[in-house]
Image (cartoon, rainbow, N blue to C red; front, side):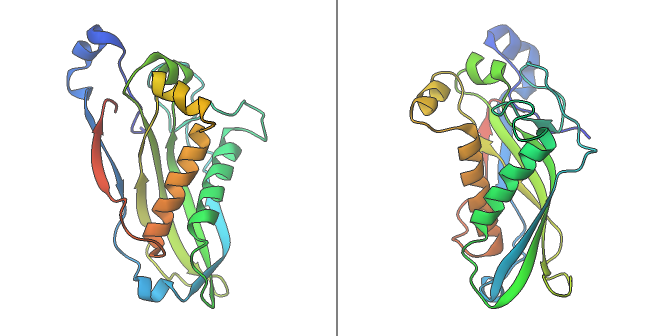
Length: 210
């Protein structure tokens, strides 16, 4: 699978060589499929996050590894492999994002990750004003008792502007990590998709990246 990749160039020569890759378009987007009047009766009692082993992983310290999963803020073996690390991040985000639903009907949230592309060390510390966290997954709500589908399978884009260079150093000084920013953003996206929070995040943005 070919992922949408994080920022690709460093320096004027690289920018010229990449041409149209400069100033890529990114988005936070999902279909408007869940009626808040319906979802307010739900209560998420189970969250099933799947990170398929078929997704490719890269540990290459380059600007834009061609892989579905790029994650460096946690060490390899720190609580498991990359698949398990991504699983924990998305599970934590989904748990927070679904916490606003307090109805009486128990439901299960099923999320299947398709892309989790954060920054390599080279991108995070070697660039300025560039870089995007690409997070994409499918999402569906099912009845926790019967397994009946309560929503279609929806593709969710949760891209987020990444901090690089001086921005990255300043965020670290504040104690703000990539992991924390991604969890906060994805949780808000899930809340918006579920209809339990204002739908204010959907939209497109441009950033030096791909």
